[in-house]
Amino acid sequence: MQWFGKKSAQRALDEKRPDGKDRLPPGQYLTKKWPVLSYERTPQQLPTDWQLKVTGKVEHPLELTWEEFLALPRATFTADIHCVTTWSRYDNTWEGVHIREILRRAKPLPSATFVTAHSWTGYTTNLPLADLDDDDVMIALKHDGQDLEPQHGGPVRLLVPKLYFYKSAKWLDGLEFMERDRPGFWEQRGYHNHADPWTEERYW
Image 1 (tube, rainbow, N blue to C red):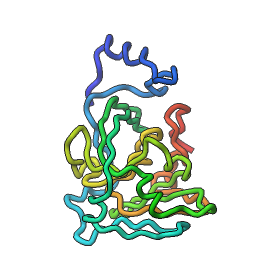
Image 2 (spheres, one colour):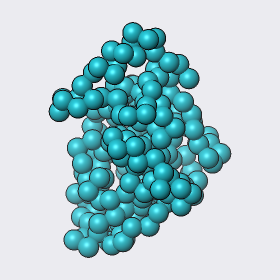
Image 3 (tube, rainbow, N blue to C red):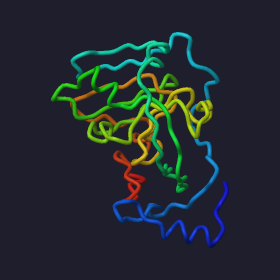
Image 4 (cartoon, rainbow, N blue to C red):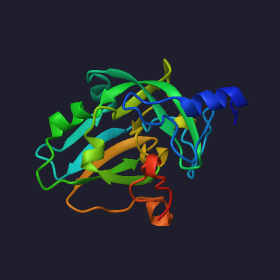
């Protein structure tokens, strides 16, 4: 991992977000690199039968093939990311399908208040629908102009940058909408159920 020099680190600590709050969450350090942290073995390619399955409490369940998913409108935005292991990386440019393209098609029911993101590796993570249905959430395909590498969740991952990065499920293939919350892989193993970096929600 690469640390900024002392002066650069101080400038980073002094930076503010547009809302006037500190840009670097408490307990975090900055890195220009992108550390790789995964529990499961990294898959080297997309499954030949991959589909994005949107299930549960929705009016219109979806099963999109890779070609159908790639045909959806694209969005691009820049966001900081924060890992629960204390590193942060500023100014990541992401390209992919905005989550609201999926929500408009699936139409979550009023009873849907939580979502579980599924990966084809078996990984899961949970979050409130209110955190998923937001301006800065997408299903990402590119990072800083390049296709997402497998070690970083490529070719397709969830991106929820306002929460610790274990909520941004790598190797995404499903979104399950639910009435009640259900802890995911790391949440069952002691990581915080909500994962807000600004209040250091790291562990239960």
